Length: 389
Ligand SMILES: *Cc1c(COP(=O)(O)O)cnc(C)c1O
Image (cartoon, rainbow, N blue to C red; front, side, top):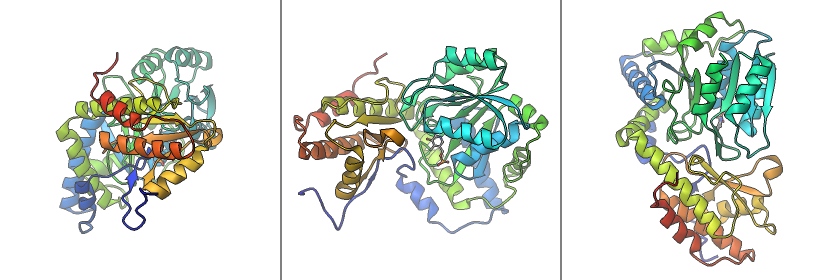
C-alpha cells in the first residue's frame, strides 16, 4: 500500500519482449519521417546493414523486413523450401511449436524432435534425428523465451553440418544478449527482431543468410512475394526496399545498434550473464525455485516458480497494477505456476533488484516467510561474482 503511487507511477518493462528502449533511441523515433527513396534513407539503411553484420558477426547478407520476428521466420520458410520438403524442427517450448505449425501450414513434411517445456535440446539428439529422417533442414530456437532455456547452438550447428543439413536459427531473443556467431559457427539462416536485445521498438526483423542458404533459395519453389529474399537483397544493395519500410524504426535501430556496438558486444554478453545470475540467485535467496536452468548460458529470461499457495497470474497482475512492473506469465499449463523476468537489452542490476524487491513484498503479503531484503542483497552480490564455469 505504502508503495502504491497511483498518479505518477513509474513503469518498468521487465518482459522478455518488447523491451525497454533507451532515451536516445526513443528520441530518434520522434524526428520527422523521411522518404524511403531519398539519399538520406539510403545512407541510413547502408549504415544499419553494416552494423547488423557486426552484430550477427557475418560477412554475408542481412535482410531487413518490416514485420515482427515471426515474419522473418516465415520468410525463411517461403524462400528455402519446395512443397513437401522434409524438415526437422526442434521444439522445447512455445516458439519451437510455432515454427512447426508454420512449416505445416506451408505444406512441408515436418518431423519433430520434441522435449518437455524447460528441457534443453541435446546436440546428439539433433544428429540422431537428422540421420533418421534424412531431413535437409533443421529448425532450432536458440533462446526459447517461453522457458528461459538457451541451447548450445554451436554444438548443434556442428551436428547439422555433419549431417549435411541447413540450419535455420530463431535468435530473436538471443541476438545481442548472448553470443551468436553466424559465420564462425556456420549458421545458414539466423532470424532476429528489433524489439528484444537490440533495444528498439517492435516493427523490424532480420534474416542473415549464408551462401548455402542463397543456393537453396534459388532452387526452392514455394510462392513468395512480400518476403522474397532475392528481390529484397537487390533493393537493399541500393539502400532501398521493395516497399515502404518502417522508416522511423530504421532510424531508431541505427541509434540502438550504434549504442550496442560502441559499448561492445562482449560487454553486452557479460552484462546479460551477470543479470541472469543476479536474478536467479535473488529468486533462490527468497526460497523460490527456478523453472529455467540455473546456468550461466541461460541469461536471457529467468523463469521462476511461485510458492504452492500463490497463483502466478495474480502475482503478475499485482506487480503491474500496484508497482508498474511488467513481467511475463507462463504459457499454457505453466500460467498459474511460473512468471518470467526478461533482462534482454537495456537493463541494469537495479532493474533486477527493483523487480525482486516487489516480488518479495507481494509474496510476504501473501503469507510467505521470507527474510526481508535477502533477495536484493544476494542479487547485488551475485552480480559482481565472476562467472561460474
Ligand atoms: C519474441 C520471439 C519471437 C518473435 O515474436 P514476434 O512477436 O513475431 O516478434 C520468436 N522467437 C522467439 C524465441 C522470441 O522470443
